[in-house]
Image (cartoon, rainbow, N blue to C red; front, side):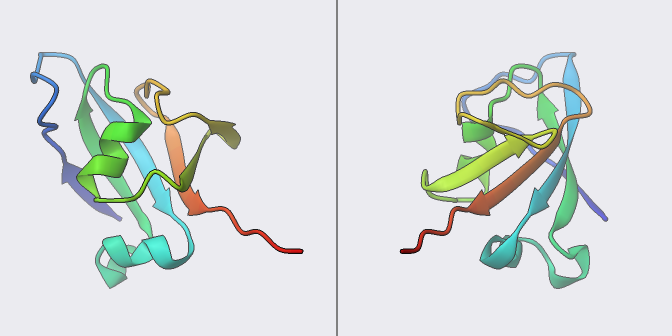
Length: 93
């Protein structure tokens, strides 16, 4: 699993940092190296939100997010050790 250190433009790096385990599902896996198999660990500044991760990977706002298996909004504040999963919702009829 790859470890990415992400410095977010809209956050000042403070002494408090957190690690978030990220899993990208489906076609979103293409945003990571193939050998990562859709999984990586991010090092983020305290106060980072799901939207910050979406922006860092240049993902659209139509991507859905879950933390710890529960769907969350993009303004959800991430905590150290969170398991963040990003996926595209499928519709049908």
